Length: 238
Image 1 (tube, rainbow, N blue to C red):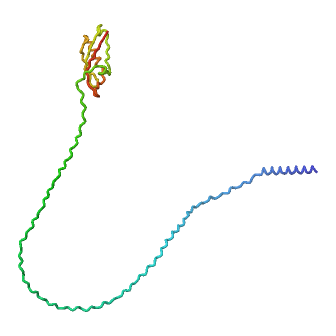
Image 2 (cartoon, rainbow, N blue to C red):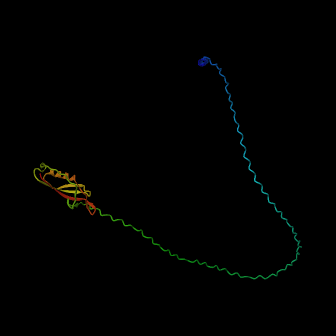
């Protein structure tokens, strides 16, 4: 019994294998491509519907015209007045009155007296212009130089003379030189003059050159600068 079942199963398996093999070797049927015609597209313009017109405004209702009142005019008949009678007026002649002779006296013209008015003009005195006094000018500094001393309460050096001498310049002896110095109000030296010589002209010239290169401070009195004149001695030793 078991053998029959096994053989049946084997047979079924072989049958399936054979069917699979046959199916694998079958050529697929070739399908012809279906040719499709191209679609034709046609553009159609969409016509817009005309917009409806706005409704006409309603006319306002007409006001009823007021009825005109017809006034009745009464005709009043005036009574006819009879014409007036014209009376004859008799003209009465006026009696002629005798004319009176009137004497005409000469006219006396009145004298026109013009009043004379005396006008007294008041002379208004003009105020005298106020003359402002000019500020008093400060007294000009005395052009003549002031005689002062050098140092102390006198004039001071701003740049003192630089004098260097050698024994050769002094010729081996002590020498003394006195010079008179003149300077302007700014302290600038304007003139140097030897008042006492050393006996050696070259030494005197050397002293004068050294003094000319120096300078004073401005000499002041009461806030005013003055030119000065001062003597300066030089004692020179070898």
